[in-house]
Image 1 (tube, helix red, strand yellow):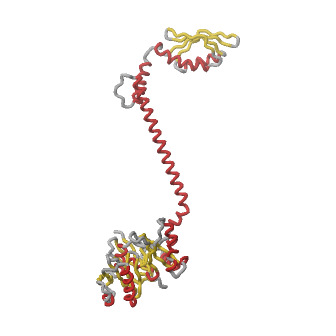
Image 2 (tube, helix red, strand yellow):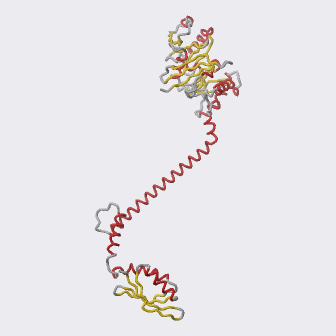
Image 3 (cartoon, helix red, strand yellow):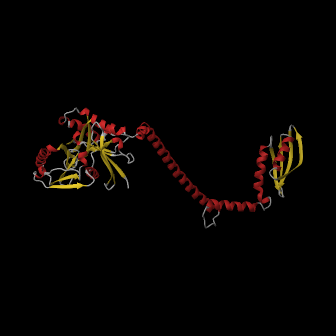
Length: 411
């Protein structure tokens, strides 16, 4: 079963943290509170990280644009009047737009604090998967509010991405002010659920005085177990956005080569597409040739009925014909022998054909040729073709040799 890691940063100078490992069902496997960050186990991949909500402002705004990049650019200036710091010194993280109201949830934190948290994690080689205020990890009861007492601070979860963190003595006043605000919007909580660990001892007398049903829930594994439960239930508003989104070393090394890799992938895709087109074209040509071969085969052998592979069947038929032709007489193979001797005659120097006759199985050829050496060369060339060549006569006159050859097939 997969194991995940939760780290809660406190932001103090001692860099103390609380941590817990948990499985996919949300059950804690190991945990520790108020320990050095160096002692956190590192074998569980990218951790979920919570930070104190006292350092984060949770608010909402309405930007009419539907283009997300324009919304990101407009949010800081839409909230500028609500914030004491200059927007250039703040980091803004956006949640999804609420369909009912059209508002966009926004978390705001001092950029220096945000960089400090990331540097604290980077120092021990942690690359967080998620970083958000701890309020948003408090379980949110349906139609109610959730309260968690954590490290002398009270975390009050009032909505999907809404709530506040306050010290215990100011809780009653803060709750009454929050209830007055939601009463104007006709959305008062029907109950308040208090989440606590077995070690916490808190008096709830002031909460009961609010006139709202108070439900207490205790977890034997402590408050970290409740934060893990809320983390699994919520739609997180991740502070790791924009230039505060950390990248691991592989991503950093990969980024300069990203365009080159994309061009290579594009080139490879075009090459594969080209090969695919060529394959289809060759496939069509092969089909057309097969059809043409079958047509020629039917025209050549009209009595053929079963045609499985016309090319192979044609080759078999031709081999059969060649075997039969080897057993017939020279007269029936006249064109074949004539084709053999015609090439040699044409290549003889100074060759001039006077007459050629075919009778009684042999050729009588009257010719003129350049010299006796050329005549002798012609005789040897024809002999190498498996023919018998006789020279009944040969006379030399005016730098030419007139001769008569008798040519027939060897038996």
